[in-house]
Amino acid sequence: MQQSLNSFLCRFSAFFLVLFLHSFLPAHAQWQPQPNLFTETYLAEQALAVPIDSAEFPEFELVPDVEGSKSPFIAGLLSFVLPGLGEAYAGNFSTGKYSLGIEIGLIAGFVGTTVYANSLETDFQTLARSNAGVSSSQKSDQFWKDISNYESMAAYNEERMQLRDYNGRYSQEDFWDWDTEANRKKYRDLRISSDEAFQATYFILGAMAVNRLFSAINAVRSVRAYNESLSSSASLRITPKVYRSRPFLVDGVGLNLEKSF
Image (cartoon, rainbow, N blue to C red; front, side, top):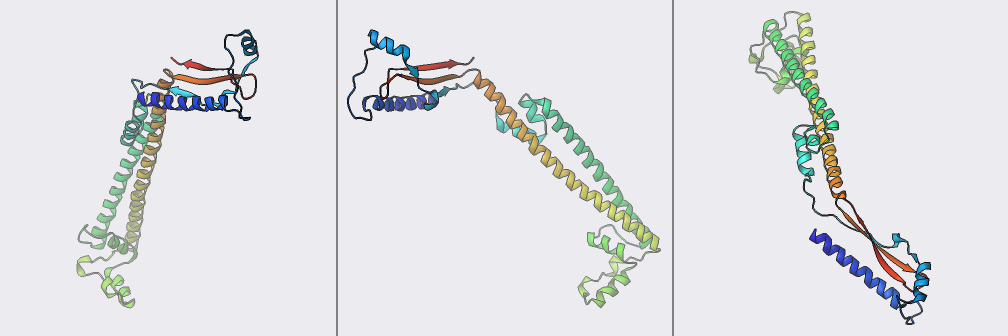
């Protein structure tokens, strides 16, 4: 409040300095006496005087610190934690409820998709152990892909030998040999479905991040609108007015005060 008042006084002093130079140093560089404000002649001229367009002069607005204002940072942070919470803090839950509803749906979708993907992963690994002779589930992702494309470890290693990729061969610890072609294809379908389900969880996480971002932006805007409504209800707007009826001669000055409650 003190800084706003000091800024106003500086700008207002500069305005009157320009006004002084404009009145006492006209274009023709001759001294012109100021009118007597109490003579009948001046009063007659004052009746004909018109105000200069107020757009030529700045408006000053003093906005005091208003109690009850809210923090945009807190609103944005709350929406990052849980979409809709920042809007509720800003008093705008009418729009925040949509962000919250979307978030609940995304969380449910993420949990459900993750459970489904893990279930498919367990199924294809169990099928590999029972129908291909895989000894353990502690294998690399590449291993689970390779056994879906080759009937046996021997067939895979033979191809590596032909390509002279000797380091790419599997050892006996990674042995597999599918009993039927149908089980291998069934395994491959289960593994692909599991991978697609896991990939879907990343898209859901991305959607959750976007939802949080939009909720935070909306919360910050809501807080700013709320704070502006408080400020506008207790502001003082000051507009300078200058009256003149003849060029290079100021007949009078005034102030237009507008108080908002």
